[in-house]
Length: 546
Image 1 (cartoon, rainbow, N blue to C red):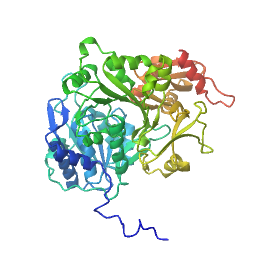
Image 2: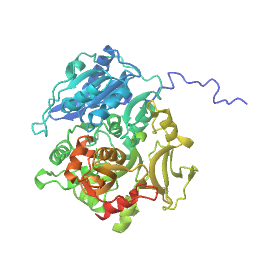
Image 3: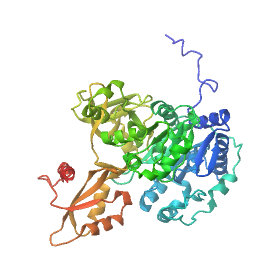
Image 4: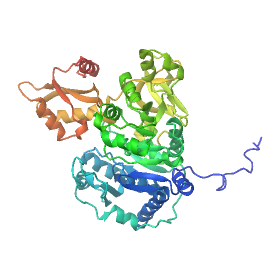
């Protein structure tokens, strides 16, 4: 029997358009053209000018032949060009690749080649490492320098040399402010590319699509309680999962972006007080920076600021300190593969009456699914059966829905493994509580989260093994008040060979990005099984008890 609701009711341009976050900025510019869109130092950019500059960028890229499927790489701080790239690049159907500004040249070179970068826009703060990466890479992109006119006088290091053939402002000025931009052909088309930390071997390129990013803008607006003309402070790096999709989110409510190059207490407090900041996101180190700031660096402000954090759950003392300082903390959880946060610890008012231990137990949980996530569960990865919702049986946390990545670029095997059984396998181990809230218990790939950065213990161990004196080693996380977690190395030396802690650390600095270098090296016999496998759980216990 013919379904009458499918008869002569077809998709057509009048009733179906691909979802894309680009249209949100277009609407904001049309509706609130004079509203303040971006604050950067002394710069004030309206929504009218934000839209026009994004169009100019798109036009300039199109003039260089950039189009669908081409990769535009950016290595930028939280500055206006980074925001413009989030709209201008997809306007020509190209893909935005944001580079982690803390990576070393070898990893950056791999990404440039793997992504087949056609254009690189680089802040002069990072020109040194990018120059080295370009020398290592096979890719030969058009290189454009961004010379930030608001670069602070008290910067921790001076600007690097110009390495490009063009200046960003000159490049954008050559574009057309009335450029006829293009909608994506399909909302499934690639929008951006973000690389994982690389737990084994090379990092994997996570591909986002227009549909997922658009749905995340609505989800962030709901779950972060973002009202009309909210004011968002950029403490979270925009290279992290495209800033958890907040560069696109702010357009929905015509909010104001307040740019911040470095996380330092006085500029944060000044921005909150001077610009009426209502929201910010960050790792535990940002909270520590705020509550441990010197009295002279702090400022009073009348509004309650919503702080979204997605790392380890904050201790009760930190939450209390944040509340006293005027912040309300929301605990989120997600991965690069889920566009950033995909779960939220939805708080129940009656939990406020619990004792301190009871509140801490509730706040330690990663929570329930984001609105556009269709499935969140804990399963036995071998049987693909859900674990009992008893808060005790450990399984793997799994996701399903429209805010799960498109897949891994040029890596069908890894994509198929990640999506085995119709669910995205997070690699995180956790439990399901009777009320449907999940809680992480361990990380199956031994990832260390330090200051919001993912550090692979395997990568650090590989560097340690390159030292001639190291016979065996294991790297685990140690709790740290400032960074949340830091890597510590347990090293067993070869017989008759000597080495100092400082020597090992200097060796690691020559091979790893600075944030990945062990904060301590402990010389000890490495515990192993009868088959020679290192017993990481014993090392973790050793790190826990000091």
